[in-house]
Image 1: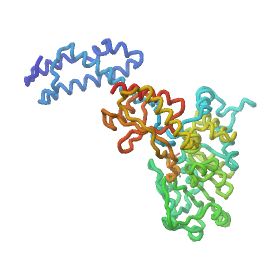
Image 2 (image 1 turned 60 degrees about the horizontal axis):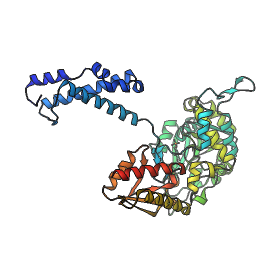
Image 3 (image 1 turned 90 degrees about the horizontal axis):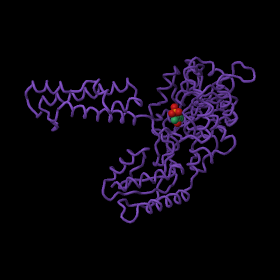
Image 4 (image 1 turned 60 degrees about the vertical axis):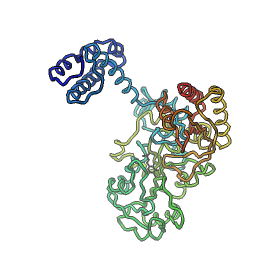
Length: 483
Ligand SMILES: *Cc1c(COP(=O)(O)O)cnc(C)c1O
């Protein structure tokens, strides 16, 4: 049938459109049935016939697509092809493993911290089935939720007790709601920051019902500023680690130890939102500004919150440590029930924290290990990788490769100033554009996420696990061979 403006003919074409039933009886649908299930496949078949119908109708209105074979047979073939594509593209939307070749260690879009081997095992072995979440084996009665992970946190930080919630934002909401109790919370103007992903300190405070008392200026706040703001309605002094933001130059901000006496004398609590939460001093890796939680506890912070999936290198969670009475208040607060975490989170966190307790975090926790890799080690890996790639590609390769100097990024709002030196594998295609190569890498399986720097695609092996290197190499070789 050829293209025509005669409405009769379009009605005839529409009659050739396969029914949903006919599509479901097709060879393609029969093949996909077990994987997709009847309901999903029917939904996809319906969407396919609808778009085909729309396309035919738009043709009638003069928008030719150039394809003008509308026999029953060819329409069914087209529908089958589209059904298969629709199913495939839906599958690709599932959560997928990616290779992070960006050098951004705590990459929020890529799921922040990759877990340690022990944490992965714990997720699979201890978490998913029935487990001792709230069961005491010794008595056969009810046990305490979150027991060991909370105790480990207290041991690691020197705090009396700890509590775990969904993320650091949830922890902040819980602390501010439960402890401000409608009273006032004092914050320095230099700490009224937005962390990213819509977490703005002033908004969180409003949401929690705390009355925000701003003190000082953006660059300077003194103990006297806090002192003047204290009234009988003051419940909290809030210290926020500015994370992804730095004020440099003429600045002053009291540390917790400077405020402890003032808080104690006025019966006011000090709450620190530490953000990334280092469990030990990471300044040897360039992270001088990250609060070490046990130092904050020792300096007199009454309660501290931090993320479980930034520098702790565990699963998404909000970790709270502090004085017994405060943690007990939080645990009993109705909001805690809405913010608590699941059994698999406790399983992974226990295994993660255990590595810190054994002082093996530098060997076992990927985030800490990646931070600790020296430029020399990374250069050696990059040179070996490039050597293997050159060898595999042979002399007629269509990629230019070299090892160049560069910088990794800590990410996740941690230490914006710390950019660890690294060695990058620079890849320049001879026949396609840089952006096309970046896209091809992203479309591979698993997707490889790289950084484009000016006229090259760069691979930073700092964030690529050694076990992923051969896979990455194979994908690059097959892309290069394909052109
Ligand atoms: C990252 C961060 C948060 C938010 O933590 P999530 O775990 O992402 O909810 C809150 N406060 C500070 C200071 C942070 O750095």
